[in-house]
Image (tube, rainbow, N blue to C red):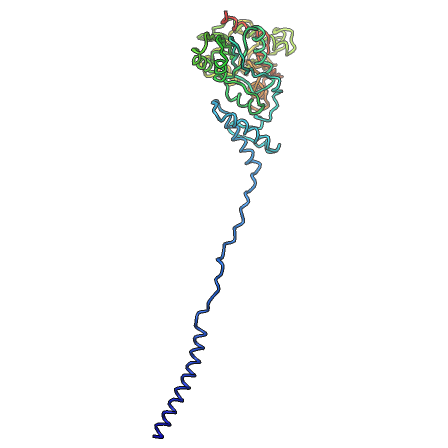
Length: 413
């Protein structure tokens, strides 16, 4: 009995010790492995990336932007956006530095588009006023962006026609939308195109419309003018279109008329006087020849230039030659004219436009310093001792103005 009691006691003691030891180890293990409750952290946010600062546009980029705006208005079609485009192009140009302006170069754009000084536009009158009355004389020109020439040549003709026809309201239209846009963008002067001018006439209740073209001949611009007028013929009581400067074209180079004779005499007389000679014969004796430079055209009316050369010969003007910027017809190309003048033995050359206005062609294609100008090519040929240029349009010659007045009177009668 005693033995069992001792054994039992020993067992209980061992059990108790085991529980104590095991319990301590379990607690230790539990404290090491039990998950530790963590406080909730705020969600991490990505730091904002630094905004990329756009690189400043280069001088060339800014110039290219202006060039694109200029090219956008160098078009022959007017749209609802044209006015805003003209304004935007000028504003962008004005924002450039002088150095950036020199970099402007596009399909048609150049620093000269806005930068060239062509005179004071404020001296011009676009003649786009309303309150026309029943009788309108619409003077239609190709146009020019050269302000001085527009005043002296085109306005000169318009003023002469107004003076001769006090009972008629003289208004203006240009057939070249490219030029209208140029003048509008650069100078803020609004000139009507054909549709605008005709719409203005209808809105003002015009009954009798006379159209006087200042175009040189029955060429492409004249054809476009006629198409525009024909679309409005039923809007007026009467519509009449007068002859252009050189009158009827004719079939070949031999056909001349009184109009061509009057123009030949007028331009030659002015050129001789300006060059300081007493007469054309005096110039001839001094070895001087005159080259009158027209625009040229691929239109069938190009024969008019050949007819003008015939007219000069008929008048005995042996030292007068006709050329064209476009080189059409072929005998009026620069190389052909150089050869003709040289073979005739003349050593002095006076160049002058055979154009109603002395605009871009006269100032650049004829008298410019570029190697492809007529002045430069005549000089480079080495065949002549001296070169002179006269930059003056036909429109400022009184005899030419009188011829337009006569043409207008003819259709009015």
